[in-house]
Length: 215
Image (tube, helix red, strand yellow):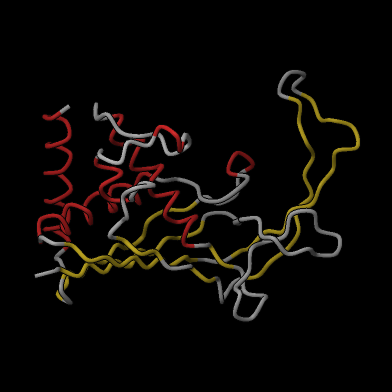
């Protein structure tokens, strides 16, 4: 019998957020990605959310001594490690489905930036550019998946919970202070029944112990 996993994660946005879209905008070099529905509401694409959580999970597991893939090198993705089991690989479909997170209650403005030379540690001349930034108090993320066993669903929820707690910034221009966020709430439902927070924490501790012992 398949088991349905549903997750709602709420983050407080500590700074503005930027994820570059494909639309052109007058007087803006880097415009935000927006909803395809109305063409104006800023969104965090599902692929961005998935990639951010995967990167965070990889960093955590490596810190615990696990051999996991580096998603920044697609040609080296193995398809068999714990990260690939949860997030998928080119030849392995993930059981999870991520949804776009829309910023309905926010506002936008344009920030001016300048390109910097890492070698000279100084600004390039005539390299001024503009970046559209979205501002909102909170960001809500929804994730859903189907699993063949209850244990697999709970372990996946535990890894996503740890990854959401460990990630500190989302989107582009993180080195320029954009996209900083903090996890406020993480709600898990398995087969439409809420998983108590103490059970989620226990599952997370068990996952940490298992990864360290198997490293």
